[in-house]
Image (cartoon, rainbow, N blue to C red; front, top):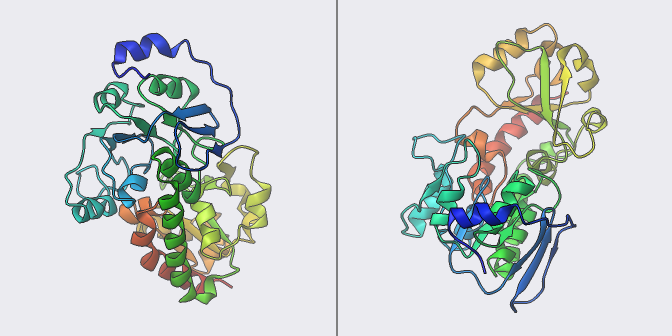
Length: 331
């Protein structure tokens, strides 16, 4: 039995110590259901009726499956109208003729009181950065479905598999994966020039200091989405990847190591691109010199580059077209 009041949560959280394990899903539709993940083993005693989510975009799984969560995290990046809800989520709420539920503020960490107040039967967090202590506390509110291996490394397929299993809708989750894969294949088929090109996702370049290059690697969902689109990871990025990390960083003085990068994808707009071209170090990267750079801006498209069930259809046409133009420019 789960406690939904914060005093109870705080009192019991210190008593938990759950073992780490590889992810697994219980089969069938019988209850209790057992889901094993990186932070422990979650038992769901009966089919959940009230579903809350924390972390990035987990609410998109129930919404895509036609279920309105009782609460989910407010958008902190990419929102274009200050309603703290990304446009593809707003569009889905309109399709469901539903008003937004309470939004959890996560800028300073999980808002346990708000989550508890939503009285959930299950908390979905398959794509998140939950720490063990946060997971333990949330588990005193309701069963929690956490990430399968490491923080912020869950790809969109595993997000759907784990979150839909936590809802008792694993079969519907599999169908959602299949339909999403079909949409991706259709979009990619229109731009065959993308296939086989290498791509690097450079993250949040500081226009006031271009001396450091930060990048995501194959442990990050954004880079794995490259592979869905037919792009490959450069050997240089693979070799620069630290075990268990989803990002890396190097001095711009070493950018020559990225000569095998055909396409760069990064946040920001035209002004940043001009600074990259003018920079004596970044400007000599082949992708920059060849104008094979995709600038995502800082709005919805930037947020949608992190693939999620509702964002993928939203971003595909424009994103794939940009990548195709960059691939055309790459030499």
